[in-house]
Image (cartoon, rainbow over all chains, first blue to last red; front, top):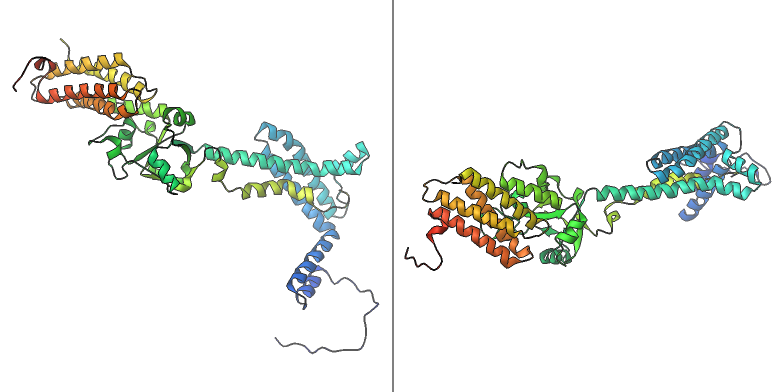
Length: 315
Length: 112
């Protein structure tokens, strides 16, 4: 692109007060200048903060968005008793912020919420008023984090089964592998596996491709523990087509089906075909290791963070 | 005289009681085994010399024997459960041979 020649007129602007060219023009000037990239970013950030502090529209918008996130977070918290205790003041505070933010956008008010004003009127202390005003969304964020972690944990546990390890299982896990059936290419059905009897000699050791797990931790601990440890299996990481709960699939019209049904019910057995991948196996004490925590933390920060740490004049 | 149906019902009932306890609480129910053993011996007597066998009830006997054999290593008394399995396998084999326990008395020599 051809550059226009620089014309030096000899007139100096030193000492003159000129109008602010605006945020966009200032940013363009900064990023087209010859200064180092780090300095550009630093100046750009400073310019952005300056522009934000000076803009009721921007601050009001942030306040409305923060209030909306508080309301959304409050709705989410109402699913539990403890959460409701935080959700009610959080919802009120969210609505308060939305109203205050809207007033600020349209040119009335300075962003001071009813919560702040009410507390200040009651206590006469700006510190206490500010603490309450920012403490409510902070508590909402903390409650949201706690609730998010608990829901995530419940989600994992609701689709978890357990296995008391045998010697071969323990060795496989030590080698970084998953679990395998005693005879991965055997031809026993899931019913025959649960019965522990099917065609051929040699029992399950020679014929069963299935791996027994149980939904009931106490069954694994008290019924099958062999002293080689115990693991939890995240069934959502095992192909659904390879999982069978025999009791749901037998008609109980003959002896073998009836025996299999009762054993599967007692053991709460989930039979897994051939193998369980290593990534589906976790410590029974750490179900949260199976879920990504960043979305939960981000949601909590959105619920409490924007309103807690937003810039404001009066609060 | 017992009927096949009556023996079959007793065999299934005693098998369920014995095996369900063994596979869940690991309790070894001796009385249930004695009922099962008597029912299977009676079945052998009823089927003695028959050219055709009722497949379902004979298979139920074989199934019970195999479950006991396979569960024995995990039971509280593997020798005892193993002996129970052996007793049922003996009866099953006699049924296939067309014989009953009366044909093989302890202490009586038999050439063939």
